Image (tube, rainbow, N blue to C red; front, side):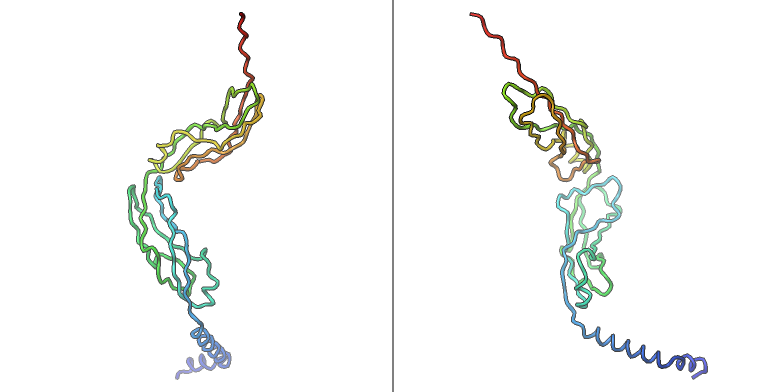
Length: 226
């Protein structure tokens, strides 16, 4: 053994020996630690989404991921630590099937991904469309005797929608939540929301809608002369 190697081995020999003993003991403890399996239901994450492309699936796809690892590690893992990733790079309009494999799942170090269910997911894609549609207030309730609605206006009068092209072009107006105008005499203002029934279409800049309801007293018809 050369002098350099001898000095390397013998320098702080006791500390090195103690460190070695602790390392061996730690390995022995870990090697005997129980191993368990757990499963998490997590949303599938879509990365590299092309510009101006929308997913047309109404239900957000989920995956069940089964993990295996030391009990001390898996007991501290939550669903937020498990990421199932699908890349949409290069995807165009139409339908496409994506495989879901353990290699697409990101988990904390020390945990092994055993299985992903489902093994694949099928999605539809369409061009993104933007369209402005009018807001139609929905007024309900009973007015005082002799009164009728003279005018109903919405501010803003239109909202901008965004979503898959085929879905957006099929929508011609947005409705407000029902407005109870019971007892209104003259003018009243209500704050409400506008919505569309299609779950894949959303408002580009969500904002409260101001609805102004104006009622007027109906004039009695003139009495007939005999």
